[in-house]
Image (cartoon, rainbow, N blue to C red; front, side, top):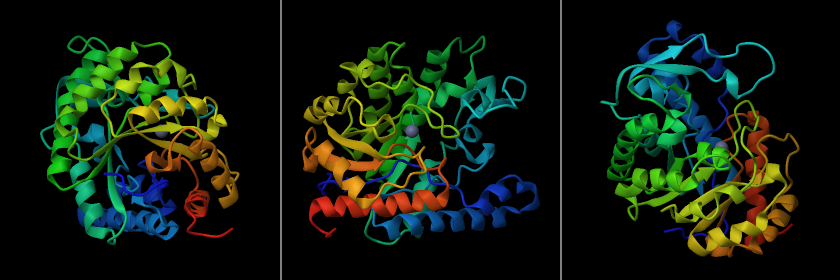
Length: 344
Ligand SMILES: [Zn+2]
């Protein structure tokens, strides 16, 4: 289903405009209609930046996931924020992400919200680019929930969340979504110490209902909360088990790792399309179109053009908007240079 050689795409998130961040901290000042309008305005801004850059695939920038209630956990019954477990001060890092207690049986009677996000994107986006929806996989989604008597460990929580993700994927396809990413960066972060066969099994059971019904991909990175990695940043521990993931395309973080292990992309390309992170979302050096073209040529040694997509390393939510915008513009220019559509 992937048509465009050296397709330009993104991982789900895009930076919030400053006013949206301010508003999200003062939501009690706004009425429901104000919030609805605000979210649409933010999505319009994210669409504008991506369409102006000329991307082949765009998202809603995850602009709606602006507070607990509007994020995935807000859609799941049985979760309460735990205010005491998280480190509050000091340098930014993953241990500052909010933890949550499970207080009753986990249920998601209203789905996970991704279908509404997709329909909003479809309503607001111009014709042309492919519209992509992103949903976290159940293992990644379980990461900020604390085990308890009923759900003894992270894997038990993962199994409890899996039906919610499966249902959301089915509903996305039913709503007409043709491009879906199931984000499982926790699997790439912890591949070095966990059972990778078990990861592949969890992933494949999650996506089973929609395999072959959309262009399905996964995003594997090594963490980007507050622009900081958290994993052991190597592809090797994922092999060979991640080659068994039933996806059309795998996305792998490369730029921030200075393209370490680039030769390992070849084994993925034998089985699936490969989206390579060629834009460093953690670095404020703005890649030039010539940098992008050079990086794509390096990727082409291991992945044929018709199987290659290029993208930033991760979602852009942790990168300032001015930088995110210019990085996307230059990424598309560089890709067009290699495709022979634009001169230097
Ligand atoms: Zn990521």
